[in-house]
Structure formats: structure tokens, C-alpha cells
Picture 1 (cartoon, protein in one colour):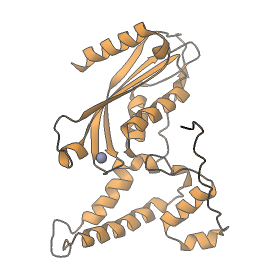
Picture 2 (cartoon, helix red, strand yellow; picture 1 turned 180 degrees about the vertical axis):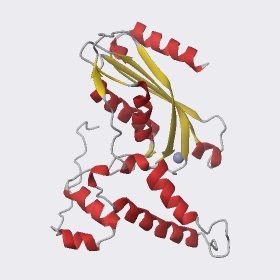
Picture 3 (cartoon, rainbow, N blue to C red; picture 1 turned 135 degrees about the vertical axis):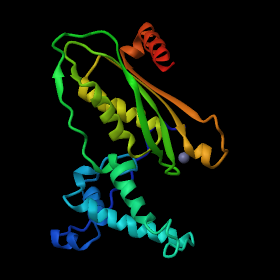
Picture 4 (cartoon, rainbow, N blue to C red; picture 1 turned 90 degrees about the vertical axis):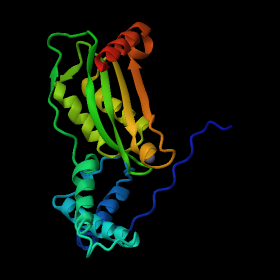
Length: 249
Ligand SMILES: [Zn+2]
């Protein structure tokens, strides 16, 4: 087997468009145009807020609502006389854009970092942080918990405890794959805090396993990321995992 990485597909050549031309397009096309123009990846779990202009989220919601209405129509649901589904398309659009996938459209929450004045260098554990996400495959809920272990050094930036939950929520509020979600969270925290060691454990329930498919009731999935000192030092890793087990019970 060859080990060379696959060559990325060539970016499509975009015709340059003026702001007036863009303004005539639906908001989703306008945003997509900017993303393609910047050759920016826009997978389900990517944040695209830098490409969304003021007022466009409302336009996007209207578009999603119209498409969701078509979906209900294709499912042969009479949303006119069925009062239960009358407002469903609008509710879906708001739920996706503002809430459950809001982490794609909102910028990163502001997080104040402060220097490690006390020169803390002991293992810190944050958690359990509640995780509410959705799987990219079925858009079914993923509900679970995350624990973060940090080994700061004198140059680390510290962030307030509640900020871990806010950053986590921002990353999880997107259609995700659990393995990628923990990596994204690790990258974000690594960049902000710059600790000597970082460990993340996520345990979550995947509702696409309960609700459909095998309908398995034992479907919790556990993932972890270990970096720096947690990778090199087996004692530190053990300490983190044993404290986590105690916090969990
Ligand atoms: Zn799924």
C-alpha cells in the first residue's frame, strides 16, 4: 500500500462575482461562494461564522424553513390541516441554526485568558461537562459528558472554569463524529491554554443506535485524546483516569 496522502481535489474555478450579483443569490449560495473563494473547508462540523454577514442568518433560516417544508411535503404529511406539524418547518429551521447546529454559525465565545500568576503546575480536572451534539450521519442526538485534564506550566494561559463548558458547547453544537469532536476540542484548548499536558475523555450516547438501526440500548461510546505529558507519563495518565472514575460515581 502506498503511504502518500491522497491529493486533494482541485478547487473549482469560481467566476468572480460582484457584491450586486451576490446579493441576488440565496444566502446559502452567497455564503458558499465566499467559502469556495477562500478555499475554506465547510464540512458539517466546521465553523463558518467568518463567512456569514449581518442579517444572513435570518435569510438562512427562511431558506431552511422552505426546504424543511418540502421535506414534510415529500413525506406526505398534510401540514395544512395537521395542526401538530403546521409550524414544524419553522421550528426545525430555528432549532438547527440557532440551537443544535449553532456552533457552525456563531463565532467562538469570548474567552478571557489570564497568565498563570500562581505558577500552578498540578493536574487540573474539569468536568463532567454536559455534551449535546448530533451525529453527522443521521443528525440524531448525541448526549454525553466530557472531562478535561490539564497539566499547566508557568507559561500557560488559564481560562475560567465555565469557559471550558462554553468552548465545548460551541464545538459540540454541530453535526459531529465523536472522534473528530474530541480532537477539535483538544486543538482549541491546546491553542488557548498551552499546557504541558492535555487529556480529554468523552463518553456519549448515540441516539441513532437507540432509535434506529440495531436499537441497541448499550450504545455509549468512549473516546479519549492524550497529549504531551499525558502521553509520556503513565503515572499522570493513571492519576487522571482514577480521579475521573471517582468524579463519575
Ligand atoms: Zn448516526
